[in-house]
Length: 270
Ligand code: ADP
Ligand code: MG
Image (cartoon, rainbow, N blue to C red; front, side, top):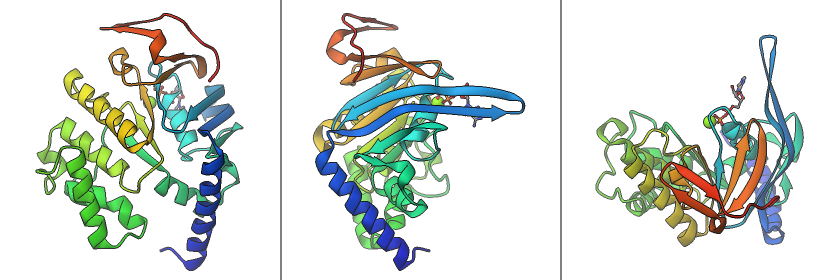
């Protein structure tokens, strides 16, 4: 249960983040981020000093094979896990400096998440799934319901509001997840291989939806993928290999063909 202290902390986080937002052209800035997992006696260096900047309103794809560190990087940016070294700034606020409550506020209001496996609540309707983050954010029930219906219409599911996940196709479930990610008007959407469980045509529709939301609502989108066909929506692509960002490439410098991508002109840094 949220206390008035929590609300105040949320309020000051909101103020700091809003003040930051006015100054920052980079909505995300990760500097020298390292993450080591220890499993039994073994050490896995999932991120080996990643520098990664994203401008407000950009659509950035993170391209990398399975195990390259994409999800780990997302967890750092989303404040779900902490780096062993390095810093992550969201709107120029160092998220390591936030209290638990402030971090919870940031995760709830600033960032929307979309996962490969949709992660919907199976027993809840599309409407309830989309309303849930708004109720966490203390939006009154009636407002949350109206907004959830509007969001479900926005993603093309106006006629599936009362369907449960098992009554929907994978593509429809992922649309519900997109609507849920937008519930609290996030500045950033983190999509972790959102098309990984979908056929190509359906996957492409989800990418087009994310692109439309990026363009029309100005939401910054960061989308992890290992599918070359999903790169065409991106303004910029970061290539992640074995915990290291090898290069950034602007969309204009890429030639994307089925199953093959070549770089016309590569550029270091962001
Ligand atoms: P990707 O999302 O690109 O497939 P991940 O970020 O999931 O890659 O994983 C990067 C590396 O870190 C992999 O070698 C993976 O096995 C390892 N890893 C990820 N999470 C953990 C964990 N909780 N414990 C141990 N190793 C992990
Ligand atoms: Mg992953």
